[in-house]
Length: 179
Image (cartoon, rainbow, N blue to C red):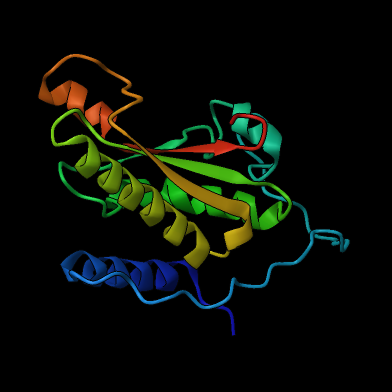
């Protein structure tokens, strides 16, 4: 039985809240969800973006009107829980991965300059893993996604103020050919 997207997000949110409260590492994941190889033909038409592109095609990644054009999930200070405002973005990228099972993604977790180098590397990894787990709960396979931490080493903004730090607390999603 296939679960609805809202039900998956509810399950994901509950899991993330429990993980945020836990001091132990999460339990091992079950095997990846099965996804069709995309080779079967279908008589239904794919949805299109405002520009006329299939929103789950790789060409949509370069279309500013596409839901998958944006590639960053931003986090609150010292947090790695995906905020509600970024769930539609994660959902759109998950659908792209599901519809294109041979496509690979690299998620780079980032942190602002506050905290030690080791702490920021660990926080960046937790952020990247949170995005990866959300994508997998929505149907992407583990083989499609790699998560790494860049810590504070790749800032988007170099000033020392809250507006700048907020830009550096993120997980960036890159596709094959971009990393």
